[in-house]
Amino acid sequence: MTKEKNKLLTLFPLVLAIIVIGSLIFVLKAKSSNQPKTVKDDQVSQASEENQGEPKLEYNKEEFKFGTISMKKGNVKHLFPIKNTGSGNLKISKMATSCMCTTAQLIVGEKKSPLVQMHDGAAAWTEELKPGQEGQIEVVFDPAAHGPEGVGEIMRVISFESNDPANKKVELHFSANVVR
Image (cartoon, rainbow, N blue to C red; front, top):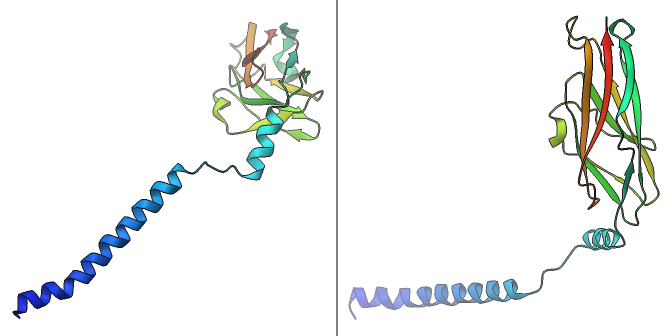
């Protein structure tokens, strides 16, 4: 035998082993991709919880009017009550205000959302209200935020999203007449 034939005979079992192992890996991957996907227990309970019913957001759609407020007297506050009157968990998320002079915070029992302002709607928080549970959105307006020229009639908006099919995007409005 020549040296070249001897090398080929030595490499043949190695090449054959690589081909066999590669084929087994391919077959096993193909089988596993055809298997039904399993869902973790917490995902199952979450899915069944969400499928128990539909959430329904109840809130006052009317604009709140502070009336005339003085810059000198400082911030004013209002609570917008909300309630889940549906049979599924209500999720509130992506809250934001229309101006930096306004902050908002969702309060559910002892839990409080992060304090949000303008453009904070992308904040990665979500709060749930169980069926029958109530909460409130606390809004604080700083009448002096725009300086001495910020007098006159104002209107601001607090917006958020919910999983209530009838109220996916919600806006709460308030107005005031700011004086020095």
